[in-house]
Length: 130
Image 1 (cartoon, rainbow, N blue to C red):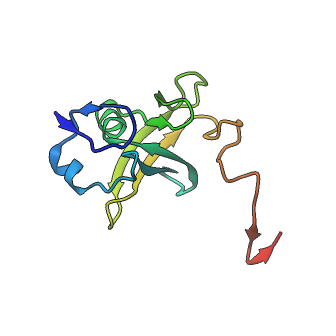
Image 2 (cartoon, rainbow, N blue to C red):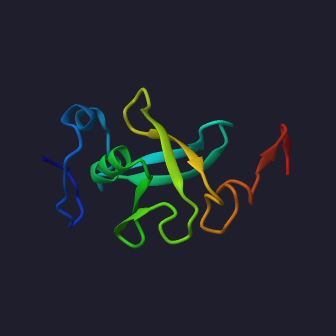
């Protein structure tokens, strides 16, 4: 079991593979961004936060698990809404500070019910400012 380096009050143990854990770069709270992308279209769905335990759960259950910074708890995408994310693949970026989770999304990925978290507030479209 690995211990994460954290500056918050949680003492989290995880069974994340030590070789994966050693490659991760985390913020001061022990978190790193996780981008969810639709596996077959490349559509960017959402950005969530993970720690080592959330990544371990994601890798072992095949369902995306995130850390809620506001609620300070783990949550499985779709557990309450039914808008599930079935994990197809997980990749670590070249710097080790972000993971890309390619998923098969059922329903909306955004908590608002939108397909993606990036549908509502487009700042630049087709090279033209909105």
